[in-house]
Length: 299
Image (cartoon, rainbow, N blue to C red; front, side, top):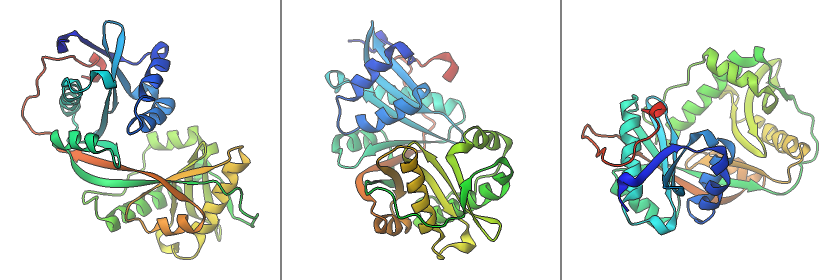
């Protein structure tokens, strides 16, 4: 098969089922990409030969850092297709202003790790995925409530500061800076305000969280109030809220080195797997463009 025979285009709704079946063939990378496919199908580019789906490219384009994963059907591996698709996508991300590209691999997937290293990716950080199935906690009095738009400035400030300080303590993010508030983010928070919660102390916002389905996707406590049990009370409330919405388990992820893992362990969360993130600074050399091209909207 010639690489020039490969056609790339955005994944269409009609091929979503075929894409899910493709990802289910791999126990290492498939489950993680399948979760992204279910939540954000617009991030995927499909690679075809004739009408056969042979690979998927997950491409989160942003500046200055983007994220990229490639999944090739087992029967098409070891033909250079994955390498060609990665290099093609890297080149187009770089042309759009990306300075760094990250990729992710499930821990223990030695061949995938070796593939990323062969392309110049180096270790970045690791995420521990955890799950709790112990049911609701005994009901406690809590000062938690749903987020409102007027909470944005205070909630975003504590969220940005807490996560920046955590990243600096972990030591894998030397370039970390607190995220700046903007109207785009405020609009995004307002759009799913029913999934954002705050915890009040003496009339002020002391903690903030975002839940997504049965996942606690972020939780942060104001820096000057940490160590007072607010995080424990808030996480228990979040778990109960997720159960109240009909879910039987609660999931979250924690960066390796984040001391919050001790809290999660004490509340009954157990590790399910780890994801290794790797990062690359694309050099100035020209990648081969003889292979397939991405849709013009990404160029």
